[in-house]
Length: 217
Image 1 (cartoon, rainbow, N blue to C red):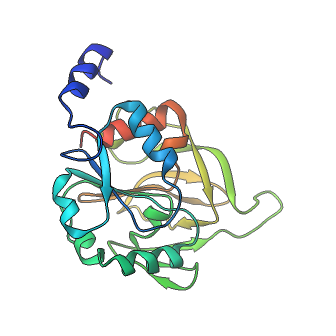
Image 2 (spheres, rainbow, N blue to C red):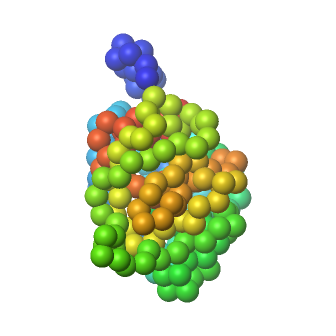
Image 3 (cartoon, helix red, strand yellow):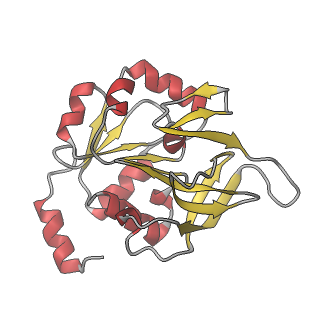
């Protein structure tokens, strides 16, 4: 992490909130993004909204948010007409929660075909006496590859999860893992695409560290 003095210098050079070189949040009607925008504001990270293809050019990085049903979210995303543009992105792109699941090839939720940026599947947790579904609350995350997204985040740090479906573990794409009845991908990485199953905007200091790291990729 940079010290507060150098951090202030970086922020002062950043474009104003609302666009221009910061993070573009892809809007497609898949959940409340207030907690995400509030976290970015708190951190002084410039951001704006993407609703049309031309909007992508204003930003250096992108976030695909999402909560709820993956199949319904994919339908909404397809209705925007932005899917070809998203699949062709070559700048850092982060999917959060359902936004991460959309990056996979298929979800058991709604028997849905997704973006297929990662050739792995989104599967449903099996309910058990010791493991209730959805998986809700704080859980430890263990990075498995070196990547600046997890810079200054200790191994085993806690992040906040709320989900009934998980990304199958695949060593080729798993950036970090978590255990909840089964080992699964807490985050994934392939080229310029990243995904996190947890909510960094609700995960305290380490979640904020991750968002700051993403803003510098």
